[in-house]
Image (spheres, rainbow, N blue to C red):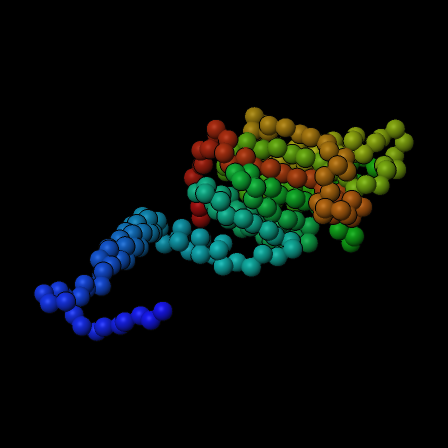
Length: 237
């Protein structure tokens, strides 16, 4: 079967113009306005902070985490001030191998732990030794000017206690209470202490390594979301 093809146009008819997309520029313009609004919002927020606050935020976002000091910035304007007070203590700064700092939501955790070369507790009874008291006293000095509630935890490694009739539960509780006494001796109001807990070896500092010397430690928890959040006048904060 044959088909006849013709190029003849029908008189009076004009080929239809191709359909033009008319709305794409509106989407691009809307994206531009959104980005511009976000830019001005950021500039407005930045203009409301002091130069010191901007410097603190820049330092924490650019600081390289180390094994001895791990911090996470969260949306709490007072956390940088507490961290600054802790880090400004020369004793704590010089003892980087025995201290770790972490931020967990609204809780700042200070871990004072032993190393193979530097014990922090007396053998067998859980009391802080001279070095342990020195570090806990420095932490107490850093926190005495704040009104946040605190908790204290004591920990052991996974080895059984060498003292007769004195389990790791007893040992960890003794460590927590020894740290509590040191903190209150440095001016921490006893009403700020929410809990003193012995956890034995149930929460190793390094997951999967329950026998490390670093597991022999006390944890000081600062609850920055607690109700008593007033801060006394403190130089440099």
